[in-house]
Amino acid sequence: MYIILVYDINTKRGGKMLKLCRKYLNWIQNSVFEGELTNIQLENLKADANEIMQEGDSLIIFNNKSKKWLNKEIIGQEKSSINNFL
Image (cartoon, rainbow, N blue to C red; front, top):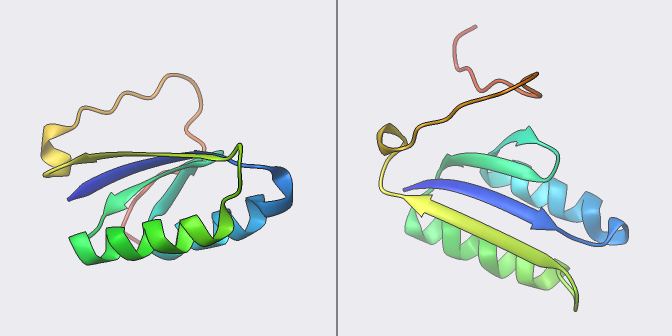
């Protein structure tokens, strides 16, 4: 499935959450990630995130069956392009 993940977390734990999300997904903008995950990978990501998060923190996960059903429009500067070509 294709995932878009957004988090809003206390800066004290922000580095840990950034590292965790980069382990599973591609960083596209401050606190925003996207990429393909299996159901098991998503469950592992959520379990690991729960260990980092505390009261007041937020994690939002949008999912879709495939990237092909997602229209993405970037207005302004793209912070990080996802490109597998070298």
